[in-house]
Image 1 (cartoon, rainbow over the protein chains, first blue to last red):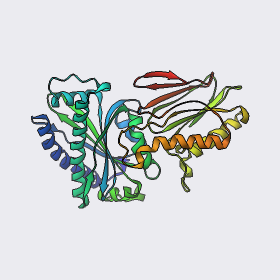
Image 2: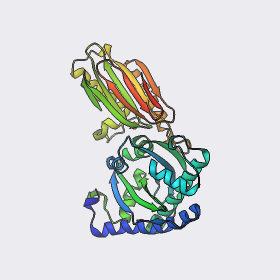
Image 3: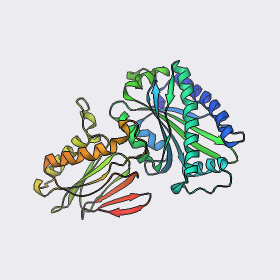
Image 4: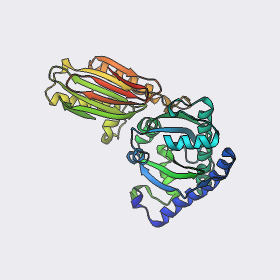
Length: 205
Length: 147
């Protein structure tokens, strides 16, 4: 779907990504206790069917932090990490830990939830700037499972009407590189609003 | 949603809150597996019938009957409908339960007995249905079972 966007529309998406990454880098540095670089992310408007393919397919095991989003563009935001990236981030945050991805301790789960919270907050605040209206995220909740499974509940609601998700893929560079994906799924009635922020008119697809 | 004859397998990966519904005709070894995301189809959504529990079951039944299945012989199995996130703040997060209930209702309306199920919980499932013997294999992060 991204191929149908004009250069200007793609620029707007990139700008969202850059601004959000700026906020995220600052907040993540505080969490980790050292500087972190966040690369210029890939930002795309994807269809529901494409989201799973961005994160390695429906059977790929991921950590997924989910937050409800309220405000001018309501929906759900998901922060997804593959195993290696999640573990790498956990080791940066909780020095000396040797996490078992499928059996994380409560502390490790809280750490991932906090990363999710920070990233959601950072990109949503950039989105709020774009929409010039408030956007608020709720409390994070974690699931570690196959991509198809973790995407099922939030995408289910979207799948009933419109098919658009905003995808941001970012790289976090500390000693190792971690790759994360932030997916914002607007509620059906907010989809047109989201598209309009990037100058996309709904029937232009 | 797919239907097939033995010796085919039908597979559906990464079911979370979605419910997998198997219909099987054991005398001629044909079956189908539907992967439904939402309970009931709303008016105007007929183009995505396979996404809804009610319409996908009806569609699957129609196809199986067209392949020669005898209505009275057909049985059902269910898997999925998990609650993936522990916090149930909005009704979005109990969609798994709603899907399971809808599946039970639709199958009951059609008079099709549910002979096995593995539903609910907090884990994603990958399903593989064997048309040769009607076995439904369920794989989660914890391991594999068969119903």
